[in-house]
Every structure is written in C-alpha cells, then in structure tokens.
Image (cartoon, rainbow, N blue to C red):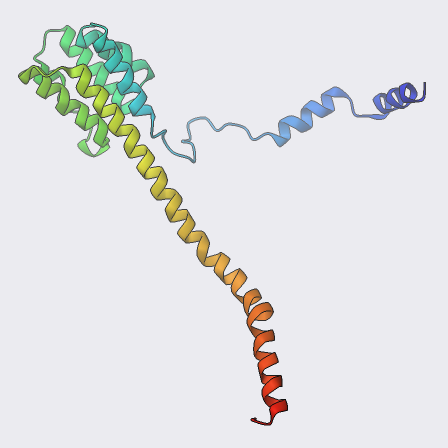
Length: 195
C-alpha cells in the first residue's frame, strides 16, 4: 500500500512528459548538415567497396554492370570514378579511356586505392589479367593499410601521453621515493659525524 502511494506521489509531483522530452532534446547535440564528421572518412569504406566490386566480377557480371552496382555504396570519389567507367563502358568506349582519371577530378583528390584500381582496370583490359582477383587483393591491401595506420596512430598517442604522465608522476616519485631516502642518509651522515 505504501509503495503504491509513494509511486502515485512521485508521478504527480514529477515533471510532465513533454518537459522531459524538451530537456532530452536540448541535451542531445543536433547533427550538423553539410559539415564533415570530426573523425574523417572511414578508412575501410574503399576496401568494402572494392570487395563488392570483386564479388560482382567473380559472380560473372560485366565490368560495367559491376561498377554501376558498386557505385551507390562507394565513397564519393570512388563512386564518381566507378559511375564514369560504367557509363563509358556501356557506351562502348575503350577500357583505357573508361578507366582513366576523370578530367574534371583533380589528380590530387584521388586516394591511392582509387588510383590503384584505375591502373589495375587499365592493365586488365590490355593484358587479360583477371580483374576480380586483382581487386580482391587490392581490397585486402586497403584493409592492411588501415590496420597499419591505426596502429601507428595508437603508438603516436602512447608517446604523446607518456610526456604529461611523466611530468605528473615524476614529482610524486621524487617527493615520496627519493626525498625520504636522501633525508634518511643525510640524517645518518650527520649522526655519524662525517658532515
């Protein structure tokens, strides 16, 4: 009986649901449209798109169809390259032309993986190398590069953290570890008469 009365009292005295919702929406940060995220692009997005392309090619799709199927899920620069290649291949352009760097895209905006894909596709069109296997190997290389970059960032962070931690713990070590030993030795030396 008493817990029921306490619950009823809490419900009557508590804030209304609309007030709780208003506070919750104020506390939650609003997503900023049009601004890039602080974390930057996903390092594995290109690798997963290359995996999709490799699977489509291994399944027997035409290169133009596989590129068109991969483009919607690819990062923006890779998606532009894939759409352009797919469109040009469908129109009957030579693979060397279709897999060239788009003229409206500055070469500096191409990431190394996209540039490597363009070179692989051009080489495959002239030498007959299986593009699916090469793209799968490129995807594996992209993932390996992302792992190495993450490890390097973690090691860099560990080095940067060690300096401030050393500055925090060094005075404590001197005050609690070295100073009592020196004071004890000085006291012993004073009592022995050497000083």
